[in-house]
Length: 217
Length: 197
Image (cartoon, rainbow over all chains, first blue to last red; front, side, top):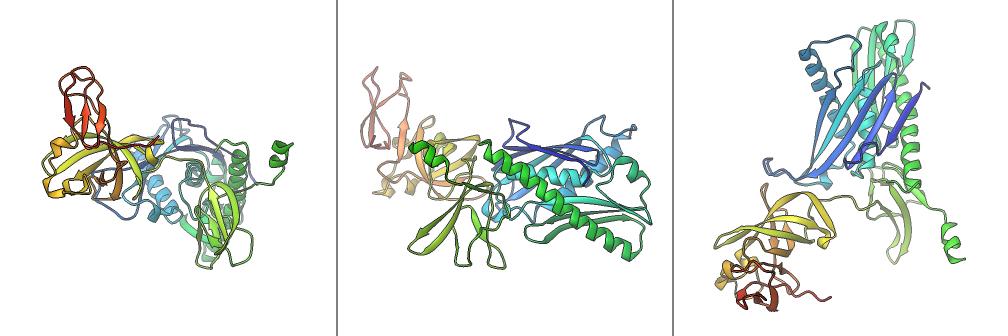
């Protein structure tokens, strides 16, 4: 499997935090909460809020601020979509949790790295979760598929498929596909991505268990 | 040695989503839940303990004491911000009976009828709770979006710290309904918490 580096507890001021390096993308995530916000309507279920910020040097080429803002909003919406099924929001009435993601470097695919970082940080913050979420991207170049693509590989892709699952429960949280590919290629890519999610999940588990064993929850 | 023997016991640490090993007769204790297929799984990262109770095997996962919003039935420590004839508005500063400090205080209120357990019609708020007092209260309900609903209607609930209105010195409790300023000797009415040490 391509190199994955993950660590927790990197931001001491936050309730939970994690950093992930995957396919050339480097992403930090900090969790803050539980917040009681009196401006929100009373809700029997908790809420997740996600904010994504790109570093000014995150992209190789200079981009218009509008394009960056659009990418940030899109990643935030997808991270929420992937993590909402996993968090037991019914345990947090009248409460919200804030997921703050900072993209240090954009590699092949930022979204899986962001989802993995958020999942790890939420577990580190002891937020109640049904299962850990693992996410991975697969690119299809017509003949070939590559899991966890790097930036140069992603440049040659015809289609990109991103999948987030909870491997412990065998359930899928998110499927996103873009580009052009035949139905068979898309299904093959989804299957490969699901396997990638399982590998990532195993790695995330290892990091959490190692930290807990050290007594540094 | 006794210490070494305790350290040799295997400790299972589990991640969210991990299934608790064992037969189906396991019950889900704190930190665990039952999924659609009946498997007991952990929902936090922590130490797994399976204990035998009269009801059967119970699995429990304990995480460290993470910050938490006030829970129904819990004792909280709060500071009175303003009062009216019917309500006392407070900001909740500590939860878990005072053991856990909140990052950001949240709002609560004590209604007139929840100040003390007897003679609720004749409650004069000014003689029970005043702005600036630190109060020990119990959470009655989540209330509405703006405030938690709290109660001080118990012997060990009520004012635990107050300053004299004339001198500003810390007052000393005299009885369940009065506190005395040690500098001026003036007694003021408060709903005092009786804390057994």
